[in-house]
Length: 286
Image 1 (cartoon, helix red, strand yellow):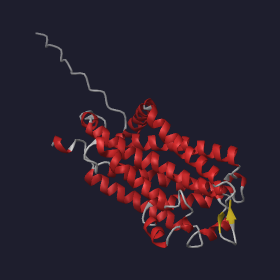
Image 2 (cartoon, helix red, strand yellow):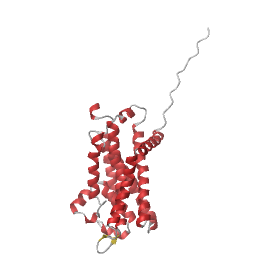
Image 3 (cartoon, helix red, strand yellow):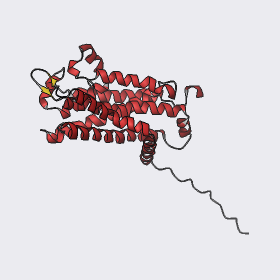
Image 4 (spheres, one colour):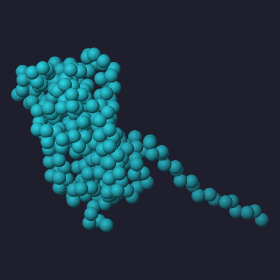
């Protein structure tokens, strides 16, 4: 008597690795981002418009002291690059994740086999891609319209570009993880903009973005020094301003070590707080 052949159940296809899924998630995030035309226009044009307004209004009013000064557009550009990074990382992520949580997108996503890490990799990839585009637009406007010298045309170009790279990457990373952590604070997606936007505006005013940092009151400088935006702006000033301009800083130096330390500290704080407080569901959904 012949035994019946054994039928084996088909083996389930293995999921791609987390890194591959993170790349695919980044593509999905970018597609979704560019479909929201109003958000795209605001995020990309806000720093450009602010640079154009301030550089035009204060044209001819150099920033500095009696010993040293620089053209306003040149001094203002680094702060706008820093605030652009903050908009695309902290503000954009904090609001969008709160909305995704409120409309149930996060809950549905969590029910899929996609690893949580791949979702966050996608958000970081979105931040990096949009920040690069936004910064490139700012540099083009500053160089073409306002004749701001670029770091590759200045002395110690290699060192300036290296500083730009680590300040940019650390700023994007710290802003992204803090945005993820802060996204749990708004009670709903509808209130996210009202909760998050004022925080960003206050930091812009006290961190040397809209006004020369050395001209701000001492207490305001002290408060701003706790937060990363001030250090991102200062790090960017060390890239785009002549070395003599370090004398305009309250400390009299660029403080690269302190800049790196503060940005890394906020990166760690954002990771710890985000890991403890991040929610995939609304507060009223269990």
